Length: 377
Image 1 (tube, rainbow, N blue to C red):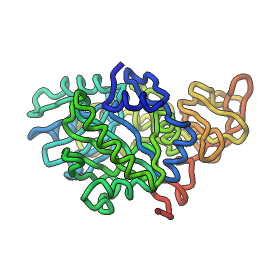
Image 2 (image 1 turned 180 degrees about the vertical axis):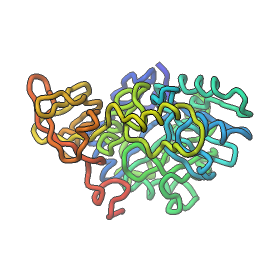
Image 3 (image 1 turned 180 degrees about the horizontal axis):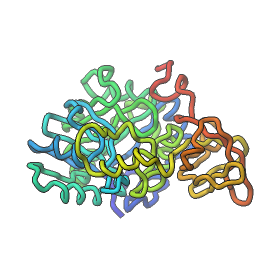
Image 4 (image 1 turned 30 degrees about the horizontal axis):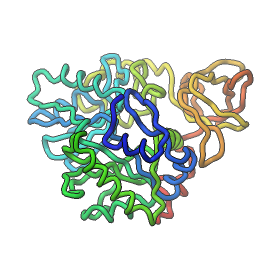
């Protein structure tokens, strides 16, 4: 298994370690519920070094990325980032990605861990004719995420830049313990927080990254900062209505079907998959992603069938018990004609059908939780 700079440290600290898409990662440190609620109410820190990171630079980098991704890269200014998808020729999602524009001709593309090699090869394959350099820097650029309402207060003790000016989807460069670092206001939990990439620390020098990690933990002690694993990361992203590659999106699902159309700019010019997506807009979608909240006791899981009026109308792709809401929640795909917020449906859990209803995401009250909460500490 591949190891991050922190894998051995986590194991020595008693974390429950598991294999995740080829990486040795912590599932939890104390419990999924405890870590989940720490992020919603205080702060949590995640090792996300298993995610793929590609450095893309060169005079054609903007035009190249505009061709291989669905969002409009030309409108992305230096010091900002956006969410996007990379499609195949049929409009299916090869990956959903975050793209950071560092300078005019320098970008960092963050991919899902499971798709790192696939996307690197896809970029190389489609870069012919462009003056662009593509480098996979995953193994020497470790990455952390600090998420939760106290994330800003914690990180402000570590960095000199004014984090209040670093609003959502903005990024800045700074130094942490002498290392060049990119810090962005972003994350995968629905909460306010930061993702931090520390440049050029090879795995053989893990002790230097461990020092940075421990320094952030120390800074967060007074704010209840907790170490968090993959378990809480998954329940948090689902509460926020965020997709997981391999569950909710894949190469047989388009960003239009997944309701990720905000990351698809059809008017920007040619890009891979555009023709197929245009056909789908003209002819209609095959399926659409919906949010589901249980009305009765039961935990929905992937592959469970969704029923309405004695007809199977779709399938659950992600489901869990929400530690915040104390109820089962899920997302899945249904036939477009059934896509209606408030519609009551049934989910086939084991041998019985359990009542649920279609809801919008995020599943929580945005005035109380998440980055739009009204009472920010």
